[in-house]
Image 1 (spheres, rainbow, N blue to C red):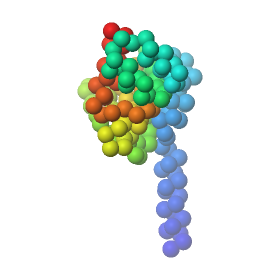
Image 2: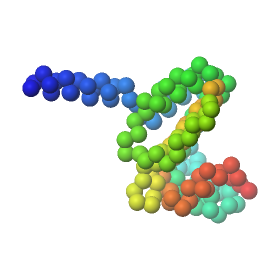
Image 3: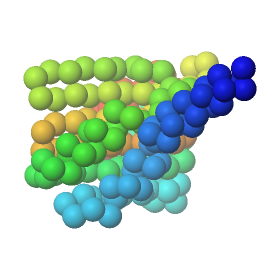
Image 4: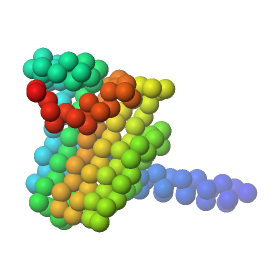
Length: 156
């Protein structure tokens, strides 16, 4: 019986050793050549909120505590390693909102929520030589999720 418990404990430890959190994934790649990493804290986001003319975007930005962005461009080797490590990323406690694979592109969106409020949003977009990780922390209402995706119209 002791052997069985030991083997089970060893399996749990070895499984968790290979998986990683989104934070570890970000930190592992942020300083690699060809990788752009951006951390936007509440103060930085407040400046953006003040600059936008779109009231919906302003309200949503006010509810965001931080955004982390990691972008790898024109680097197939780093993207391949990033994608491999992203597959091991722990998603316990997160709900898969989107999981789309088309040819050489994969997009995955995860949320951690409390009823109709999203506390964390993770967007992974993987291509052969371009990868992006977006990690948003805050209190985003599910009804405002379109604004997160529509931030490309920021300031309009």
